[in-house]
Every structure is written in C-alpha cells, then in structure tokens.
Length: 54
Image (cartoon, rainbow, N blue to C red; front, side):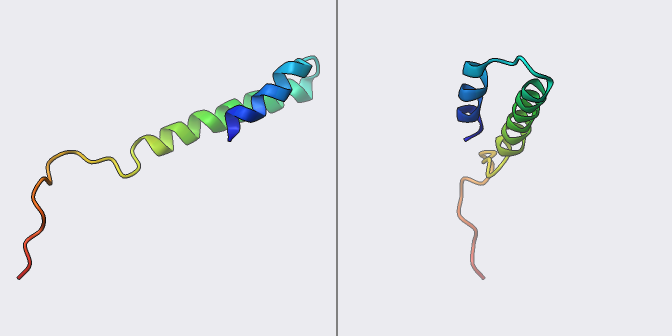
C-alpha cells in the first residue's frame, strides 16, 4: 500500500518541506515494513519431517 502513496506525492512534486518530510517518512515506513516482513514465517528448511505424536 505504501508505494502507491508515493505516486501523488511525486506527481505534485516535493516543493515544500511538508511534502518532502511526508515522502521521507513514508519511504522509511516502507523500508521498515520490508525489514519486518522479510523474516515473517520464513522456513529454514530444517523441519522437513512432520512432528511425531506420542
């Protein structure tokens, strides 16, 4: 969702300090979301066999 918000900001330009700050904050949020989602539910490949039931 965040990359789609960039389009209107870039089309109108970064002519004011508020627009530039908004763009940088959105960009930072996008980077943080990518970092947080990168390891979410990542399978390391070590658990190829199903757990054994007792």
